[in-house]
Length: 122
Image 1 (cartoon, rainbow, N blue to C red):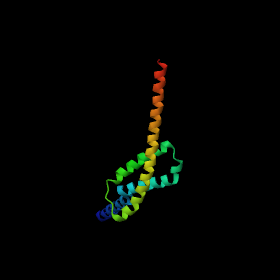
Image 2 (spheres, rainbow, N blue to C red):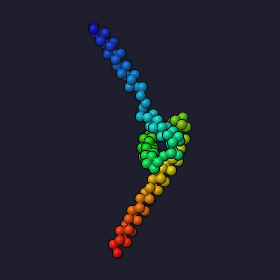
Image 3 (spheres, one colour):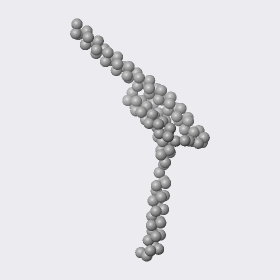
């Protein structure tokens, strides 16, 4: 291959590499996609969530919310994102109540064991 052919080949290869690197979603788009997926899943399946799934939802919601806070969105993007964030925040309130209910249930269970141990020690 002559020098001209090598240069054309290198330029073409560089162009293809740039094209492939530009095809994937940006980190900002990926954060919005995670919010969309989380919102759609909760909308479709939340009435069937187990306690563990609610806790998992809450963890994912907090991670996605943290990611979204790193970016600045224009008005058009906010028009799409804000309703999803609102719905997910409502689901997160439900998830927090489930998590606190479990925590309280565990504390009551533990206290029963303490009192049983105290009664048997008399």
